[in-house]
Image 1 (tube, rainbow, N blue to C red):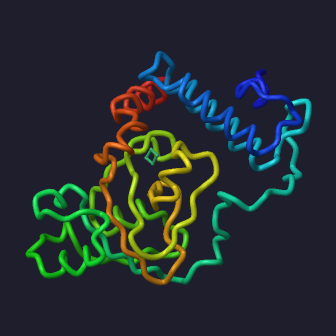
Image 2: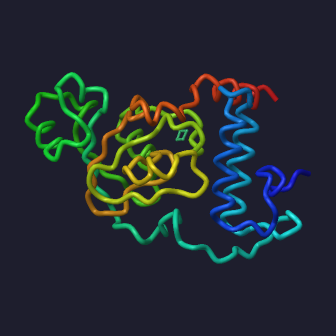
Length: 226
Ligand code: FES
C-alpha cells in the first residue's frame, strides 16, 4: 500500500512547510482539470491530513499517537465554541446587482436595508456539532456543495465578521485563508455571532480551485453501484 509520504513525494523527516509545499504541488498535479482524477486528488488530501495530524510513523504506517503540531490550521475543539452560533448570511451572487463588494464596511447594513428574500439574506442558528453547511441545510437552505470533504471548493464562504478556523487538509491556499475564505462543509464559526457571505465559489480567485460537482456525482454513483 502506498504510504502518505509516497503519495505526497516527501521524506519522512519533512517539516510542516515542506509538507504544505508538497501538498500544494501534488494537488495541482492531481487536479482533475489538469489530467488527474477525483480519486487521486482525494488521496493527496487524505495523505496530507494524515501527516499533518501526525498519525503516521516514519515507515508510513498508521499510529495512534498524534505528533505535536505548530497549532496553525488546527481545527477548533468542539467545546471551544459557544453553544449556539448566530450566523447572518448573504448570497455573493447579489453583490454585483447592487453594486456592493465584499470589502464594503457596511455590506450587511446595506443588505438589511435592501428588500432581499430569505434565501439571499437572513440569519440562522448553528447548533453544536453542525457544520455551517449542515446548519444552512437544516434551516431549509440549499447552499452549494459537492464533495463535503474539503476538496472541491463548491461550499466556500467568506467570513466578513467573526471567526471560523481553517481546517486541516483543505484545498484553499494560504492567501485565501488570510482573506477569510473558508469551507462550510468542514466547520462552523466559533464566535457567538458571525457574518458570512456564501456562494463565493463564483469569486475568480476561488473559482480557480473549483472542482465541478458533476465529478463527485460520478464518484458517488460508482460507489452506490458497487
Ligand atoms: S463541499 Fe467540497 S469542499 Fe466543501
